[in-house]
Image 1: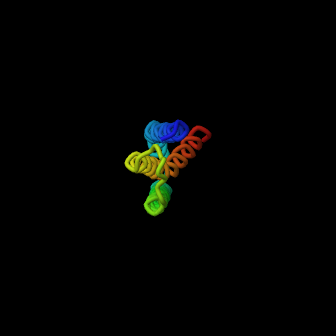
Image 2: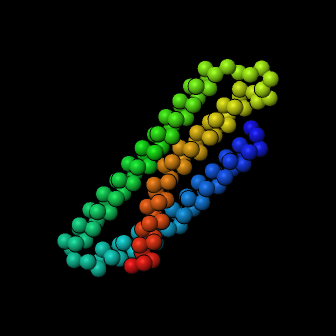
Image 3: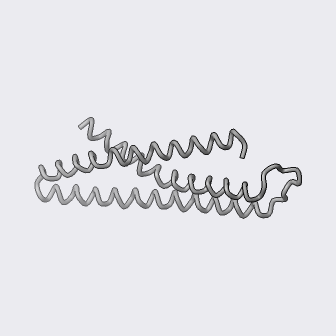
Length: 132
């Protein structure tokens, strides 16, 4: 793996860690704020708001799932193509090194794809909470 590829992989892993930390740190405060707003509302309005929250969670999960599936399919395609590509005899990287780095890239890509919709939704909800 070249220096540039290692740097890119490290940057993607760091971004994933930051997004995960944001989600873990902001989710409890957002949930607590929403529950307090629900408790202050009339029962009918609270039921509607609770239904909307449930719909939002299902939609976000679906977006994360589809992004993860898409990243997984791209990784499988990339792996399949690499199996058919001719190996260069003078290549310094062995097939095992390449397969290991490709697997790591695929895992990071899938996790990042799944985390992105969650991160966007949590940051948006935290921003709404600060404004209103």
